Amino acid sequence: MPSKHKPYRQTDQPLDHQALMKSIHMLAEQYPFLFVTELGKSILGKEIPLLRIGSGEKSVLYVGAHHGMEWLTASLLLRYTRDLCEGYAQGRSAYKLLLPLLLERYTVLVIPMLNPDGVDYHLHGVSEENPLRDRALSMNQGSNDFAAWQANARGVDLNHNYNAGFWEYKRLEAEEKISCGAPTRYSGQEPESEPETRALCDLIRFQKDLRLVLSLHTQGEVIYHRSGGRELLRARPAAEAISRMCGYRLEDADGLSAYGGLTDWCIQKMEIPAMTLECGKGQNPLPICDIFPIYARLKKALFLAPTMF
Image 1 (cartoon, rainbow, N blue to C red):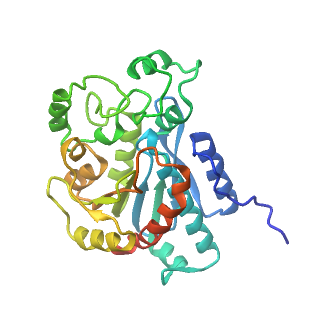
Image 2 (tube, one colour):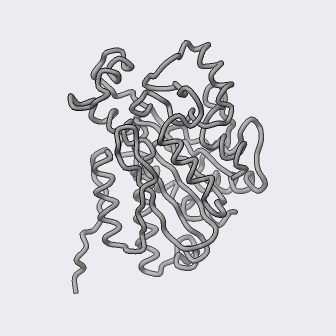
């Protein structure tokens, strides 16, 4: 008997928030064991979806699209979610790992798009109806071209809004003459000032037995797994294993990139192993045609990462 469900399909267009939500609801209809909840809402009231697969006590968390220009990471995580659901439903193995057994032992949490406002700014600009239109245009030097936009709707770079080296970053920010909302690099008035980062931090604080946080960004083909030279127990072997799987180099972040990020906060404040994967190589925004080769290199690591902790 033919299935009543429409199959999820990868589009050939960049994934904005509306397309993301449509794809997620199609997946949830097709796979009832995929639980879709709301992490929180963005500045402009857009839903930030949280996807949950599995019932294990141990959990892992994958986060995409901190930055508007890096919408490609949402597409990568959506494709991973589809493949995980499909394999689980069919009782298949992936890389010699039986998926039904994996999801009995682990819970996989996926936030494909933490910054929906920033993604939509980058892809579509700012509409006449946007209540923050004047402010957004001012932060963007009066330009209607938001192709370089990374921040959220208030001009805060979400991956510098965490309470880990935040005040050190503020000093560097001042040296760079960054003093207010901007397309990128402004960290906000205080840690977790933004609803997007605050909701994510609350999830991490209260999530039972969270073993790993992977934050996907673009680009560079590098992995950051330490913060200020600090690495947690077992993080190094896992990072080396992921490096071998995808061919990305292990590096330490430097300059402005070394402060205020999700990986920094998880390591320094929560003592949870965390890694930043800078996916693909080129110039942001990476083209949509890069999704398939990037995912092919990352797929094994995404499937096997839960078993490393």
